[in-house]
Image (cartoon, rainbow, N blue to C red):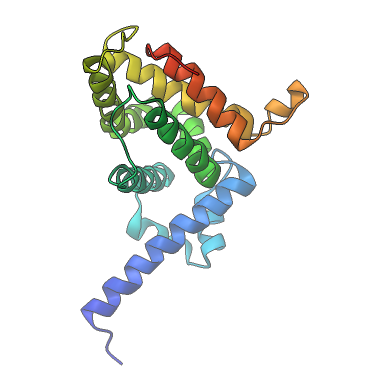
Length: 208
């Protein structure tokens, strides 16, 4: 039976999806640095050679996963509940809550990105370039906050880098299993409320 061009494309697209999903499972089980391409293809139930039809190497696959995550974030940004007014504490809280739950859902990929950037300077540079629009997105929110009367502690773009560094680091700290060494647990509500108060005060708001 002759397989049509459309069917081949559909099969190729499905293989790519399967490889990405298998990579996430392999990274969760083995860690990004320890996972091999053969681990990923075995997890996906695919021939080892099929990997290179879609990705040049493991780093390219991880970069594709990052692109998917950023696209998901872009979809969240057009949600009707999304507010770009960071003079409004609730808008800050909405962004923090969104990332807190986003991290929980995608922590394996986010942790893999951090591991890859630690050992590969070129990959780290590419990853920074991919996330730059998100930093500028937060900076635009901060410009609106300044126009509304908040006295930002610095240039909006610089403050945005603080925001986009602090929120992921806080989320990783409390959701990665490291924080229980402090002797307590942290609920989602307390985590989001505490971080919101800290960030909102830091950008010049008056936190209740």
